[in-house]
Length: 279
Ligand code: C2E
Ligand code: CA
Ligand code: CA
Ligand code: CA
Image (cartoon, rainbow, N blue to C red; front, side, top):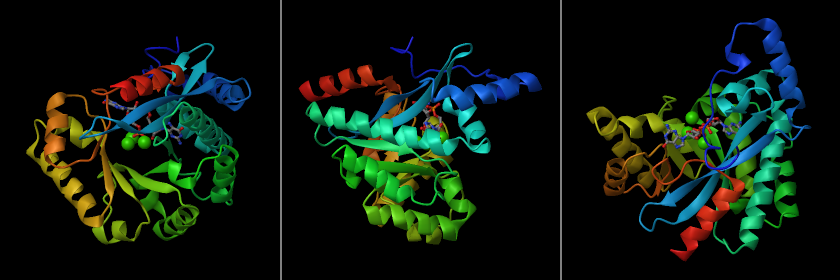
């Protein structure tokens, strides 16, 4: 069941339900999921808007639950955070994504980069940069090969501290990007201070850009802002050719969304990359 549809998940896990006993059991299941090998990563390409080539793969976690089936991250990452499990899960994600990138590199995808989502609770972890550095070394990767996506809302929570944490990651040489850009009400003066290399324009704006003048304006402004700051920008959630075309016309350099590919399990993502190269 991990093949074609692995990107899609359902949304009625016990985390969302009322029954307390069931929720406690669910949290226990989550506690054991890592040791039982129930997590896996899907990968979704970020495409160069002009050449169509895959520049980066974004790792997205999935949980194959023995009883509830495939569960998406929105249903267990918040629980993992509150239950103190995110550190171990986050470390597993970074390890697995880097191991996968090393395999793809060995297959000849020499320019490919990997992007990983970082939870709010991971950012303040002491020694995070050192541990990521160790994983990269072990897989013969360089920090520039890995991008960390951090949501705008996380960065707003404790801006001075998170800026310091970002600086440490940046000093290591990692690429940093602001996920869900446009949803966090960051001020421009604050954004300017962040040591990031890219924005990910939130899906909600792309989704409505064909019918809302405001969304269209926001997309255009975000793309111009990124350009003016010398940053990369990825439009996420691109589902239609019209959206892709509008974004290209606005000069958006990178596109991601179902139009190009759903999140794919590792084997399918490997095939996607191989087709990309032979094209
Ligand atoms: P995100 O980082 O903003 O990821 C984008 C989400 O949009 C993914 O959902 C992806 O499957 C979905 N998506 C991609 N293209 C399209 C599209 O064209 N249309 C629509 N409707 N959706 C699209 P997913 O995989 O369920 O992940 C949800 C969120 O969970 C992610 O949002 C991210 O914040 C978080 N997440 C995922 N993996 C991890 C992880 O390993 N660690 C942490 N801490 N969070 C993760
Ligand atoms: Ca992301
Ligand atoms: Ca996002
Ligand atoms: Ca999101």
